[in-house]
Length: 179
Image (cartoon, rainbow, N blue to C red; front, side, top):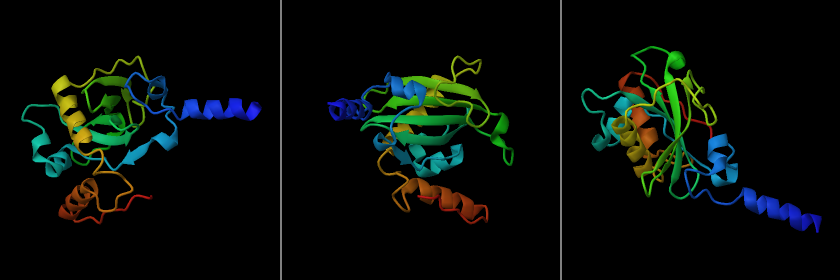
């Protein structure tokens, strides 16, 4: 009987994430078994190199895609960060975490703050203003479009190739992320 009750808990914990309103997203508690890490650490210039359709328009806020995880077939949790000036550290920049449903384009702000990791899920309310809708929607569309091609476990995926080319142009060797 106890085993049956415990197995029921495991099944509930492993239930697929089907909506951006899932409480596990707000708390950052999505089970690892439901997550696929995406290889999406792209600055605003690399985003344009990955797909010119997602280039930052003139006059728009420059945002970096600081990470993304697919937590369902069409749900992506992504971290956006203000773009740093060339050579400047990202420590004092605003950061936001959103859950996005790639089928409906529905999005929920999960966290916001200033500094690396300050925008993690649950970091609300925050005095940090959200980026303009057009600026964040462009990044949502990019992450949704590349959510299967840019999986971290896929060696030489399109996102990794763009970063490597960007570093090569700067005369640096790319570091392969641990798998």
